[in-house]
Length: 290
Length: 267
Image 1: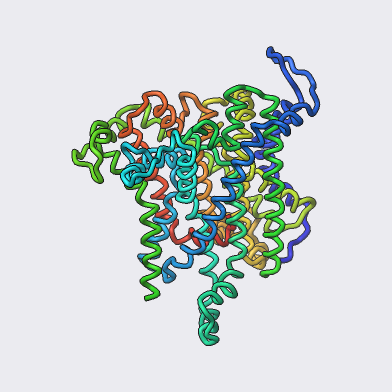
Image 2 (image 1 turned 60 degrees about the vertical axis):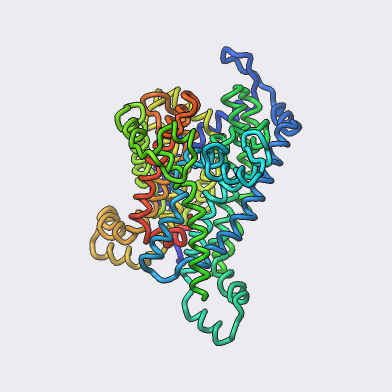
């Protein structure tokens, strides 16, 4: 649609602008402020320039947290995206009781508060009282997510898959719904194989929503805090201390404002950079579609 | 044969989703002794005690009331400011509109952990700490951009000729917006409200940082109780089950719009 040029439209955007300025720009400026200053208490601050940024960039702790974070995000993307597409292809297509029921049940994990997701898996994985832990233990597998870091990783990844695959499923399902029947009939006449139908009809049609799914999963998994916080508290040791957990430990636990602020800014800018690339890709692919 | 295979996949997937939830429900109907001493797939000594505690103890049920209060406030605020903005983005081009749009979206990408401490200081300094409105305002950080994004997608689907015809018919802007435009994008508003509700309801970090007593959310109540009294598993399970219910109800009401909202609203 061609849009009219109208500078007065700014007035309609103004409420949003004021609100977001209050809840985003002011706090962000505080962070910027802390990131270049040091304090000896008593609210006396002095300028230290970029020292904190250098310290964070060279700190072992940050490198470890970052590599754990990157590994976690890579693993869950590799599992959730293909699994999500696979399940979406098998969702019931016709409208009716069964498809409504499937939608509601599939969407359910998305609406559970994140700390309850943590609690559910904390309980489910315990060897003494949880179904998963108990079954694994009775199979003779040494499983204890509070002490064994492999088990902790396994639990966190399966929890994230449980929690968020449905988002990918719903997005892909919505994309698949928009494919007209005529396409499938044409494919049938051409005797296209199942794989060819997927590769040349379904995949191009869901490309747009798939990009959104990948973007959302990347962003949200990179910011993950609540679920591992409840489940393992970042442990055992530091095995599941991801970036957000480390940041909160640093800012609110130890009150190291300077390094925490410098860390925050780099963290935010990093996510922003990757998201911007995705966003540009997305807008471009949308442009091709219409 | 093909239908059977699809059904199998769905049954397996839904089984995988439901098992942990079933386990929580199962535990919520057991006494603590049963949970710790006898491992069973269903409650043998069926009891409502855990739920009775939650519904009679103010420190528990107030958590739910507080959460619902700030979630509803947040949904209202987000929609109220997002509607005109989304209209502007969908209809007009103006100086800096594309940059503004991405900047708004970038707030959805901000890790809440980055904002936890500055929010705490900001809301303490303006005297809003431990109030519902503080949490509601803090959650607008990610809900307003989302609402603008969803609503803009729906509004673009409404042809511009409708606006023009309405003006010719003598409607003023507000009359047109309220009487003609809003009903046309009703499902969009529904979907946007759904996502605002959802993301505000599930968030823990900000709501826990910004409240202490008066406006403490149920999520915060649960984490604090879990760490304070140690291992009252039955109570924790019952509280968890109760937090799932509002979400399940909301999904049930919007079930026919979800798929469409995901595609059109590009969430």
